[in-house]
Image (cartoon, rainbow, N blue to C red):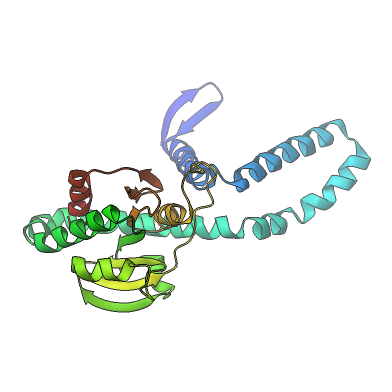
Length: 264
């Protein structure tokens, strides 16, 4: 179906759809690479492509021969260089699709049911644990996710499948606890695992004031269907990460709001 007919130019609906899809994929790639070293490599590739195009236009045979060797193996070289980013891209795409699908189903069929079954006691236990850990300046990473998340499939950490209580959460993150390193994974109303190693965000946009714990909290939300609470052992402040974004210095009320949002 032709939407516009301007002289020799025919614009179809599929042409517009094609442009929108390409633009969306470019946006996803930009979002994943922004602030990383890989973004600078992409700029270098674009500059190289421009030089290659110019050299061919000017028919500079020696440069064409030299640069052609790089072009011949360019795809293989790029796959090797961008292997982590390619993996992150497909994980992000898959998790985003699943997340959107399940959110739609939940809103369509189960929203009323879910809202009526929020365990406020569990919410209060988590809030109390976070506030107490912060007041004692005990570092903590608490991840809210589901069984579709890639971090669950990697099966690192120790599976507990334990009932949530503020005493248990606090005791796990105490420095003398053998399980205090790594993150706690919460799925539904249960503590699924502890001591889980999270992927650290490679973004260079993160302030140098934040250490490995904050970078790990941000990193898992960049590639997975997760939300993370981070307690700093240096400042005793509580931060929250979702979708690669970080909120810092949360108040008691804000902590409660973010926890409630995980059960809706």
